[in-house]
Amino acid sequence: MSTRLSHVIGFDDAPFHRAHRGDVLVAGAVFSGARLDGVLSGRVRRDGANATGVLAAMVERSRFAAQLQAVLVQGIALAGFNVVDIEALHRRLELPVIAVTRKQPDRDAVRRALLEHVPGGRRKWGIIERLGPMEPLAGLWVQRAGIDAATATALLERSALHGRLPEPLRTAHLIAGGIGAGESRHRP
Image (cartoon, rainbow, N blue to C red; front, side, top):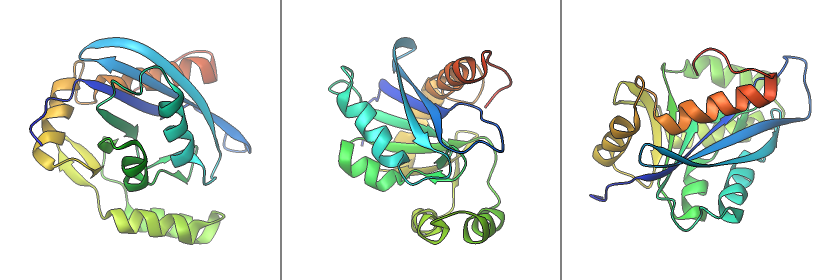
């Protein structure tokens, strides 16, 4: 894929208390190059199984759907362990999808947590296992669907305006934190 991807949405969840059960806010920041073009919001269930469908519906219902060229997600799970199946999201939206983290996750700790403490953990671990381990790209750790490593690297590097994290994810983090906690804080 040699296309320059410039219309991108980044998703991140709002902070929530450890004891919280129920839905958690998710913010989407839509960018055209370096310009913020819009904001989307939705809710996913804490440790639930609806993140993939909610993100897809948020994009599909938005006025930005026709212009979007890629989807970025802060990590492979939102709202605790509500795992995003990036391959299913890629197939449904027909867009490249990249899950991004700053640090390499401890897969063994994630597996133990899912299998021992999370409802539906075996199915969720199956999604993560199918995606394979995260790979280092552009100074970050990623899992990707529908996009080759070179194009993903170019997208991540081009959209990282204030550090390594792509601006759509950094902005989604700030928006979700500001709305969810009343004030945004620390980096994602």
